[in-house]
Image 1 (tube, rainbow, N blue to C red):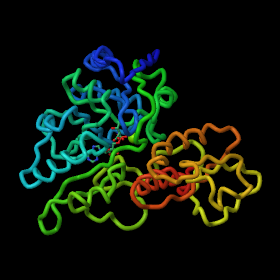
Image 2 (image 1 turned 45 degrees about the horizontal axis):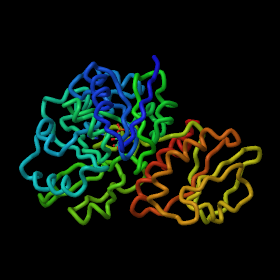
Image 3 (image 1 turned 120 degrees about the vertical axis):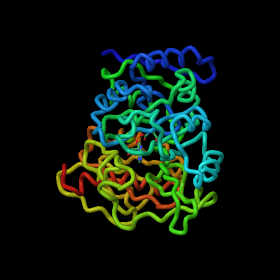
Image 4 (image 1 turned 120 degrees about the horizontal axis):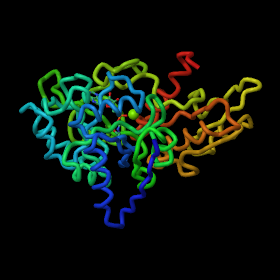
Length: 349
Ligand code: TXA
Ligand code: MG
C-alpha cells in the first residue's frame, strides 16, 4: 500500500483536508493524525472493523484499549455514562484541562464497540487541543479512536516522518502538521471516590498534566509504591516494557561516573549536555535534551525525537540516558525512560 502524506498548514483553510481524511475514515480506512502530544493512528470509533485494522497495523495486542478523541467535551454524553457523584469533578477537569493533553477513563455506553475498550466497562476519552485532530473528528461526526501511531512497544512518533518510518506502507494517509508541541502522551486519569467517598483521581499514566497541576483542582491518589508494575491494574496497556528503542537503554545518575564495558559504543542522552556524566570521554555521541538551559518542557518535546535519533545513530550500540529530576514533567519523562530501560533489565535484549 502506498502511504500518502498531506501537509496541513494551520494558516490555510484546512477544511478540504479534514473532509478528505474523514472520507477515508468513514470508508473504514486509517489515517495518522497529529495531536499536541504525539501523532495518533485514527479510525472511526464506531466502526469495529476499522478499529480491528488499528490493532493489526500496530501489531497491538487486543487487551490494550484505545483512546477516543472528541472535538468537544459535550460529546462525552454520546459515549460515557458519568456517575452523578463524579459529574462535578469531571466538569472541573474538563474545564481546566480540555482541550489539552488529558485523558479521562469513564464508564462507557454501549455505543462504543467492545473492541475499542478491549471489553472493559470504561472508555478513555480526550479532547485534544490540536486543531487538526479536532477538525477531522468534526468532519467525521464520530469520535476517532486513536492510539499513538507507532508499532506496538516502539517509541511514539512526534513528527510525520517518524510516523512514516513506523507505519509507512501499512496505512493510506498521514496528515503532516509538523512536530508535536508537547511531545509526550497525554496524562491518563481515572476519576473515582477516595476511601471517604470524596471525588479524587487516580493517575494511570503520567503526562503533560502533572500531579502538581492536578492537585490544584482535586485530590490525587498516591501512586502505588515500588517499581513500575509489569501491568498496572487499571491501565492494561501500561506494560513495564514500552516506548522502547531497538537498542538497549540504560538509566544512569548524572553525578555517578559511568563504567563502560570495553568494546561497546555508548551514546548518551543528557538533560543539559554539561553534566559530569556528559563530560566523561567514553561517549560515541552525546545528545542533550535541553542544551544549556535545562528546561523540562523543552526536554519533554524533544525526548522521543532524541531517543529515535540515538536509535538510528550508526556509531552507537547502547544508549545511556541521564536520570531526570522527578518533579513536574520530569515524572512523565522518567516514566517513559524507565519503561524503555525495563526491557534491558529484564534481560530481553
Ligand atoms: O496523547 C495520547 O494519549 C496519544 C494521542 C494520540 O492522543 N494516544 C496514546 O494512545 O498515547 P495509546 O493507545 O498509545 O495509549 C493509550 C493508553 C493505553 O496504555 C491503554 O491501556 C490506556 O490508554 N487505556 C485506554 N483505554 C483505557 C481504559 N478504558 N481503561 C484504562 N486504560 C485505558
Ligand atoms: Mg502508545
